Image 1: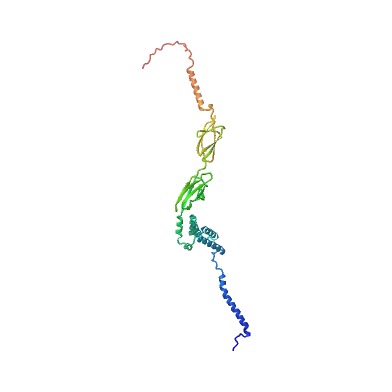
Image 2: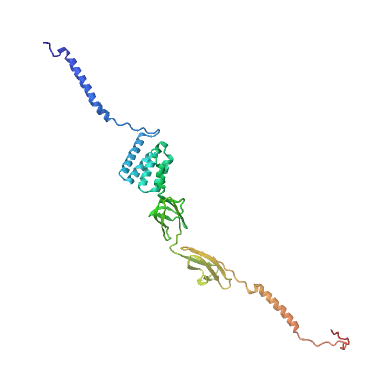
Amino acid sequence: MANQTCPRAHRPCARLLGLLLSFLVGLLVLAPATAAAQPAPARQAPAGQAPEKKSAADQLKAQGDEAMDNLKYEDALGFYNRAYDVDPRPALLYNRGRALEALTRFPEALDELEKFRAVAPDALKAKVPKLGELIEEIRGKISTLRVESNVDGAHIFVRKREVGRTPLRKPLRLNAGKAEIEIRLEGYKPFQKTLVLEGGGGHTLNAQLELKSNIGVLVVASTVAGARVKVNGKNAGTVPVEVPLAAGKHQITITAEGYKDAKTSAVVVAGARKQVRVPLEKKKPITQRWWFWTGLGAAVVTGGVLGWVFRPTAAADDGDIPPGQVGAPLLRF
């Protein structure tokens, strides 16, 4: 019978062959695990943009998408905003618009969607085939409000949220529906109005604010100490005088001995002091008045005439020729 065992001289070859077979089997076992452990290739970043920046924006957007799926719209908006700060890609404008729409912040949602339509490439907009319909639907939920007022710097509140100050540079865009509007400014009574804002329409509100106090102070002075003051025909005292008055126009009369009466007017503003200084003109002495000398001259002339008329009559001088009788005939008509 032939010997079945490997000759002693061939045993090293057999041992080497076994080691080689074991090595090959190990490679086959480890290959799948090694392949699975390799990370998925990252999406190529646009030219000039770092891959890590792109990856951070992708992660934030993914978190925002997840929050939207879970109806956590405020959280989703926060993630989208942060992603846009990292990478301002147009797609995030659309996502922000949808989050704002879900939060019923329609004017802001419209802004985002209109920006998306303006800057997104056609290939991206093609993924939103009803974009135009969506924008018009949201536009129908918005109303414009123009606010006019008699004072500047007043705070405008709509639905208890401050939205601007007077004067407004452009009309407000607000959610349509019932709206409580309040306008406030220190020193003025609050202006309040409730309006029903129509979707797709506009409204103009004229807000006239009134001062809390309708009283002002009129201060009257003059160049003549002790001059007497009348306001609207009523005695107010002697200068200087302060008179509290309702806002509006008032008549002032000042008199003083030896001076001509002075009359003027002043407008008093509520909550303010109005100062008026009125000069007085001295009266002329009687000897400097034209009628005095005219009258005196007439008196002198009249006296002279009367003196001549009523002077005593002297006896007639007979002269050297005695008077005779007139013999001429009389003319009778």
